[in-house]
Amino acid sequence: MVLENNSFESINKNRMYREQIITREDLNEFRSLLLTDLKEILSAKAQKQKQWLKSGEVRKLLNISPGTLQNFRINGTLSYTKIGGIIYYAYNDIEKILEENKVNTQPNLFKQ
Image (cartoon, rainbow, N blue to C red; front, side, top):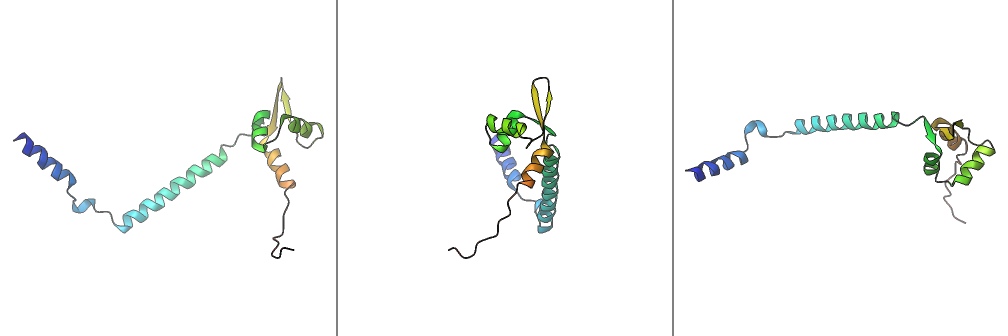
């Protein structure tokens, strides 16, 4: 009898009921909810950018050596703040410098 009960329960678990059918409307609603959640996550990540970066973070972000970063400080390319022995760089200043030095190219349709 126990065996029959278990097999009956497993059959019932696999049975599809009318209220369990997924419709196109259900999928569209799920899609829109998923997209809304993804947009919120991406915008939250964008807002969480640190305002001040340490030297190592700047070097990693720009893929430059310690000497190059020191040259940027010396020649005034990149402003900084020094507190104790730690040097901080404003993220907005780094973005500004990258934008100012951006080179806009024209597509070359005809190679010579």
